[in-house]
Image (tube, rainbow, N blue to C red; front, side):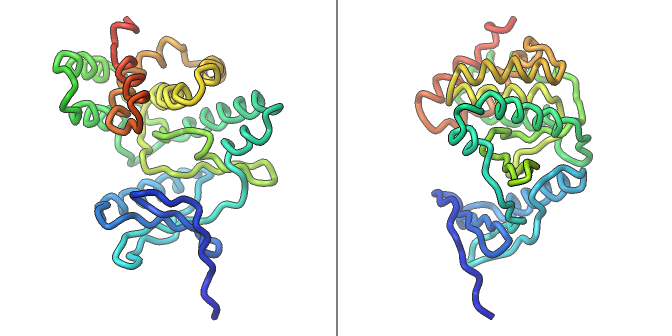
Length: 252
């Protein structure tokens, strides 16, 4: 039997993603914890069990001394690619993006970690954060209700694949939690702001209308999720933007 051809899709310092037959394989570098790989597979399999359109987990195994996750390869185009390639259809695609996010949060996430606990851990892990700011953020966080809605944790157009028949699949569930949909929307808003402020504002208004969640409530989450993203900032510009959002006085 001939060996299956490998097609590299993404190659980064911490992982390589390639297609092999009808599987998508994500190979992590050796320093990536084995427990983290199995945890990602566990989270994804839980999401599958809810009935969410997601790429199903096929295997977790060691490949050339590195741990890897294999999931179903989904044929199609990411929503991010469609937005880039179809500028005249941009607004309709943005609305589709919001519709998908609202649909995802309609699933009840049994067994996943709660968003409040995850965000608290992120805030406490920031050594350079002013203690008073940390206290205020945690006070705000623990004042939020604990919901059980499915939250993706990195919901952006590049993590949505649109098949040729128009159906959709959401991928990359490693940051998924059960919690408050407003927190997920706040995170999406911040990610979009780093790319295009006008799109972010359109998104926020659309999401508020379609989810029936007040913009003011989503804004209450923004300093909290900004703190969680600070350690992941890739540029000084991103870091400065997130630092500004952490100032909770703006939302009192």
